[in-house]
Amino acid sequence: MPRPRKLRFVQSHPAVTAFIPKGVPLRGRAEAVLSIEGLEALKLNDVQGLDQESAARVMNVSRQTFGRILAEARAIVADALVMGKILKIQGGHFDVPSPGSPGGRGGGRRMRRGRMG
Image (cartoon, rainbow, N blue to C red; front, side, top):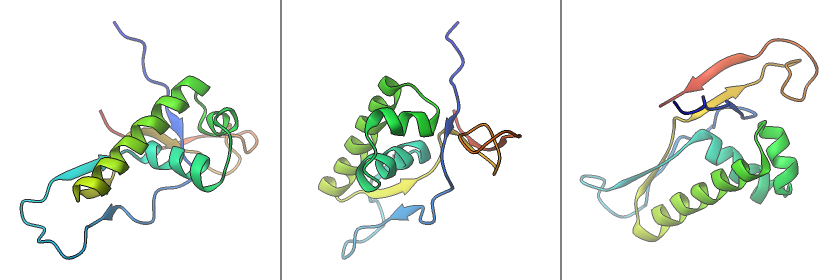
């Protein structure tokens, strides 16, 4: 029996949940799905400039797991851009820590906000 997956922390739900290529009909268009923790990994590393060790701590995962999440997220985004796919941001296995929770903001209770598969 495999070990249960540890929930990854994300700072918030995404404000935008899809990107659609312009100028091409949507009917029959392929989709790529980026998990919410994949988006968080991209944000922490590529936008905020955190190194993988620091970003892994923020997400409550090991550095190796963070690297795997980041590599997968980059591959999904690249595939969507190159192939002209709709990019949907949804699902995953994550928690959004409430203010004062163990997710790096003091002590308190975590609120489970999203899980998939």
